[in-house]
Image (cartoon, rainbow, N blue to C red; front, side, top):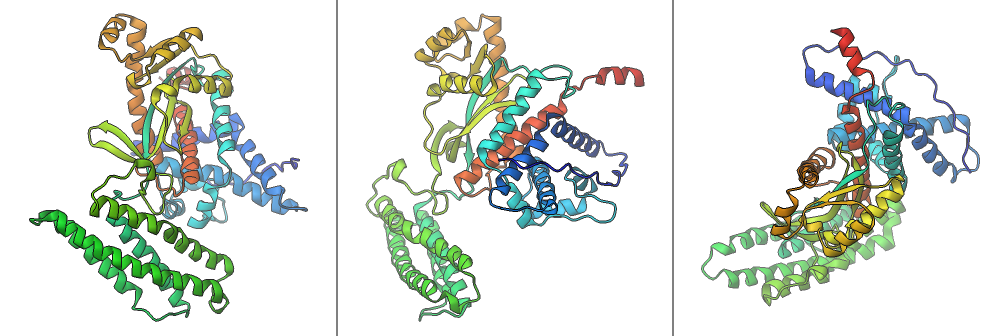
Length: 493
């Protein structure tokens, strides 16, 4: 049951300062003001706050008007701070500093008041990033697209958004991990476990052992020695010898970590930590201890026995379990490590649909029909044209597109068939437009997600991609011509 929405009081915000001689600042200011206008015209901001309010109210029996209004203000700030931080590609700490320093950013996020400016800290900004769930965020993206397509006058657009053609492509969203070398996993395990042991020892719980920093130092020396083995005459023999030393060292580290884990679990009241803080350290230790036997076995199999490990069984990171090996066969990116991202783009550059795959993604050709049906259902439209590269082409796709009466602008795999189809002006036009989707992916990855994406865990990466899509679409709409803009320019001239 939804609770009544309290209208926001009109705040007395100081006017933005006049900055002359900087066209980049003026463009950014105009974009932010236009995005603010779109949030209000589409009603997304109000629906965002209302949905967050309903979810929050379920855990409270009685809510005072003051508490509700305070939560609504935080919800509005969460929406705007997430959009602006995604647009600026800042981390939480860096964005908090920029918020405190910029009157423009304070104005957009609703922080500027005449008597004071209260800027959220990095921890608050991190909570803002997870303010709503992924399905709700997807619904706001669909609502924005639908209104831009059916109600351009309300959004003050010069013309409606064309959603009758879509262009498909896939890419890799790289995870924030180092290159997955087997022996480096042993270094990661040593460092994480000994750092946790050092925290526990700092709270007064101790077993007899050498200082944790000594184990990290030994592992670092072995890693340096391992990197120099290719320069030796018998490099493979030296690699095996160094790995055996690493394996023995990490076995000792594992034994110490298990003892300290048990000690902390049993005697945590002696520390100054709360039980949730204790659980955080225990989870950090358990996450590595559970994977360490498999990581050691993997290193032995690949280096000592010189046998390959199947991709589905390979540990790429001790901290990101959902990272996949993605073979791209592209210059500078033969193999990438992350998750496959599918994007469907409209003619104007809006992202109509997207999906970040947690398991290994199917072949591109198997995604076409399912994606078309999903787009038509979610946006309540009928697609007329589809464009994509040759990876999406297949015989069943050609047949089903013909049955659905959707023009097939997918590049065929057969060079002779491609040469024949390029004689059609419509197909050639779709292929020229389809090539721009490569640039759209580059813009989205570099300017709205960041490479690599810093969010940890698949669910958080998925949510970050959703915020990137919403911010990107608002950014594109803010750059489109507005209704009456030409008349204003003519009158000014």
